[in-house]
View (cartoon, one colour):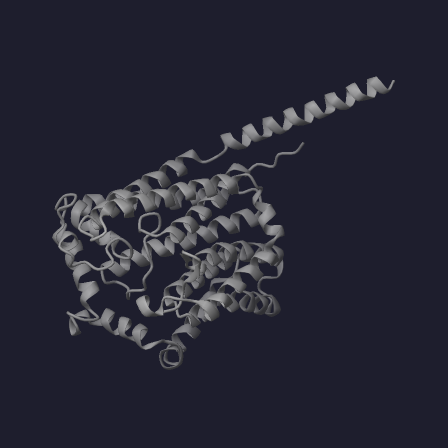
Length: 390
């Protein structure tokens, strides 16, 4: 009789394992491979254009290209790791994630570096490794916001709920603003309001907040903004006022973008790029390199790839099996969309220079890794869009 039970238990275990393999196979089939191909196409374009942007760099372009390729590979590995976990697992750990995000920002305020080179202490250095915590904090905060919005969906318009969400989201935003990092603060505001709108917050509340923000501009100007941030705004309004100083970046960028015309000057043939007139060309102004050397055609190809990426993300959010998954994907979609718009608008003079790189294109390890983590979570929601039970 015991032998019969043992055989039955073994058969039951085998059936469960087979069921798990079938489920894992079904999940793999549900991965949005079209989105992955779009992401890899954008990353490939980024590596190629970084090669051009750094062709005349004293250190040589090989090192930059290898570093970017390694960053993309690490990002793909990060996507693979994230896909192993059900995205709702991250929701269950939202409180530790929130505390870790704030702890990182506190560490930046105490131990941050970068003021000597970039004018603000936004980076943490651990041994020989340096990273910008706010890039990863955005990823964690979207998880936290998606969870808190899911919990409070039915009471979203209550004053106490809105106050709780405001304090919850406001604490990390204030710490980012203090660093100071106005561009990342704007990114926070954009995806938070976007997620609130998707969750059902009436547009009038967003309108009221916008009016309050406009009325608070004088306070921000005199009490919050640093001198270099004020200079950026003034230069944005009139870059010709200091063409060889604070207005140099934007004027050279606009010149590079305009000179590319329809077909561009050709790869490695951009005068602004190759002769060193264009500053920060492998990071903040990589779009200007693309416009100069690949022209309007190259710009259209890149923008079409970005639109396709965002479109597929929106569809994934629509098909998500629960509110948390939908809010999560839309949060990252708003974040990526803001960075794309802000960078391109900055390079053509439609926004002040904020130092925001171009997602999946610009040179930078931590920024690439954080964006790939966001893509991993979006793909996670996509592959688990149907409820699968044992």
